[in-house]
Amino acid sequence: MIYSLFVVLIVIAALLMIAIVLIQESKGGGLSSQFSSSNSIMGVRKTTDVVEKATWGLAIAMVVFSVVCAYVAPKSVTDTSVLENAATETQTTNPNTTPGFGAGSQGTATPSTPAPANAPVKK
Image (cartoon, rainbow, N blue to C red; front, side, top):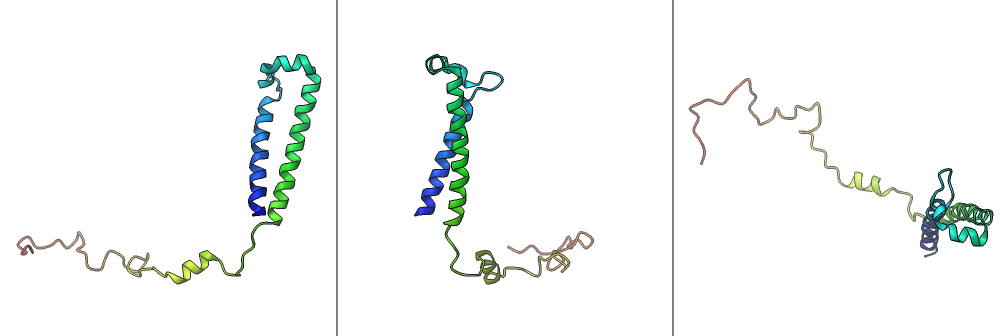
């Protein structure tokens, strides 16, 4: 339950981080040029400070959430691997199809010995 909560918080922080990075003013103007009315109200420098602080805050939050999520991750109750169990329980190796054991040479006619032309056809 707590693990799922931290996974959801990481996803929310990541989505917010994407939105804030898109809003930030880049060398080409970025999407922040579309918010010129908010720049005139709060001032250009003030908006840049808020966006930059939000970016750093979300980055730190994502790191903290990731560390906590790794700490509270569900632990395995057994020492065996699920893949190892599946591999040892279902041995489906066919020696006739294993390379080097004459696969294809058992029960098939080879091109060098064609079937007789007057052989009876089974119906």
